[in-house]
Image 1 (cartoon, rainbow over the protein chains, first blue to last red):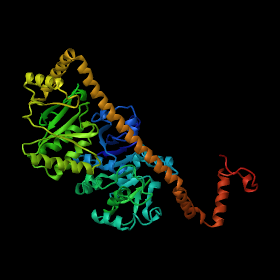
Image 2: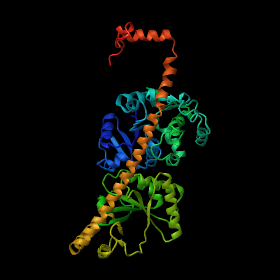
Image 3: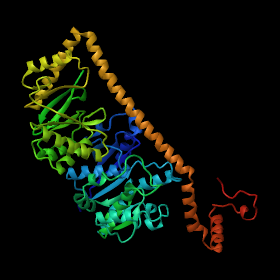
Image 4: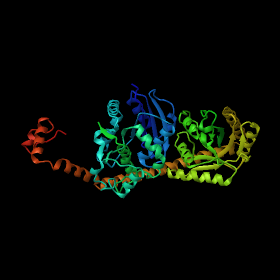
Length: 250
Length: 278
């Protein structure tokens, strides 16, 4: 059987590149392509006396890992960064079976930020990977695999009333991108494995940077009202479920 | 070097030219139908070279081309002058040059860039434009620039037929600078300091701005925490998930907790005893 290939899209805001590269070098026994986006004007990057991120570019610092670095503006938070990486993936004519979306999440305003971060990042681990590949293999309708506790249903989100359920705002986005998900399940935190062909097909129709230009600048939150950036946290999953694929949790 | 010099080559040649960014910037003169291939080659570039693009505005520059140019700005080796991506445009028609400039600027602004450093280059501008094969001319033009009142910033634009010739020109420019330094030590030092302090000034301004942004972020986080919205959300979750369970179910849960060692037995009978270990 042909071995599975995958790409990792990692968005970095808080710097510490060497730590993250070590993290990724330790995570997998299977070769993969790491797309690594840095926010170029992040305080954590400018204030750190560290090697510029580009110094790692193109050269495998691990035999199992090919690296493509991008430096982006701070637009759309991690979603915007992942769209920059999707743009790179498509322009490089990359073709992998799966894509793993990750970022260096820190939510200092969340009561259980550390626990949440661990739950999200455990999906990159080697043990988790074997289960992920099995789930994708066993059922061709599996579109997303994520940490179970991070899979939420927007109906249960009382934070924003109906902002992302059935408001004019979210309906216009669904209409624009021809989305009709059977339910409102999504992966909070936007860290999950996805069958790459689904994103390839969608983002070849709607270019990632076209989507990105509508996202908000800076480190915005949706405490005061819905944002395009947070809507896309949901939409990335609804692209998958609208195609009849399922979201599975481990 | 005292000035930022630009070495222009056609991208049909290998892009893997090893040039330290301090020696100048490689400029890839790219036909629009060759942009994708150039982008793909640059993704694998592993040296410390800095580069930027030069396009000819007489070519058809459609929306897809503009979007692809913006993707170059995200590449780690792409040259930024004081925080803005550098881009060169050449063409005989000023209107076409302006149209290309506006299209690229508009698209870049949408991607969160505050500014793009777009410069028009003209091969007839003998004050700054040279050809790699004309070594004497390069030395003379550079010496004129060194003797000018122009203190720092852009240097020469040198076009090459062959990328291998770049190293020869870099050595020539260095030698010219050395000669200038010996003849004009004070002026040399003054120009060097101007370049250094300009860079430091930009770096500190960028750091200050990013620190200001981060301070705003922290204020916003503090406001969210003060608003108790997280606590209310947690309470709401608790009420719906646990609080509304039947009393008998909760009591059974307490027995299970005690049996499994998660609650002390004594606490079931004595309100003054400690319920949990830590």
